[in-house]
Length: 148
Image 1 (tube, one colour):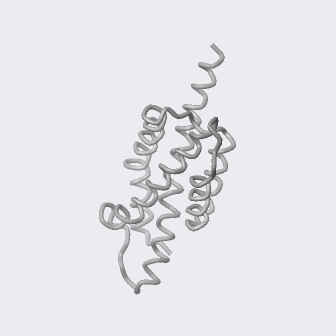
Image 2 (tube, one colour):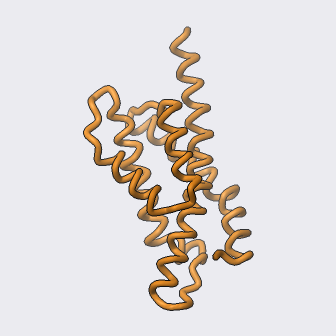
């Protein structure tokens, strides 16, 4: 169970850190990786999985998508999930404790693992919500430019 302080910190991080990072994440993929926004079905599926707040299910889903053998026309999807997987690993291994000070390390190793899973579920749900919104915006812009 997350503390009131942790919940407030996540809400603050969502607006001040996760939102700008999600925007930068999507734009970097489009610019540097020469990618495309995810389809409506792909982003809605990811968002739905993130809302379960079960980090293990989210991590497994992202890993599976990253490791799939995407055909050349959908390679951007694989790249997206590879980058998202890297972001999630960095968040869990470095940022959750050292940068955001969300872990309290009380209760022994099992309690810390449980707390980490819960925190990561919450943090990644917030991040993916912002990713989904930015992806939808970019997807709509792409569709409009194709019509012209």
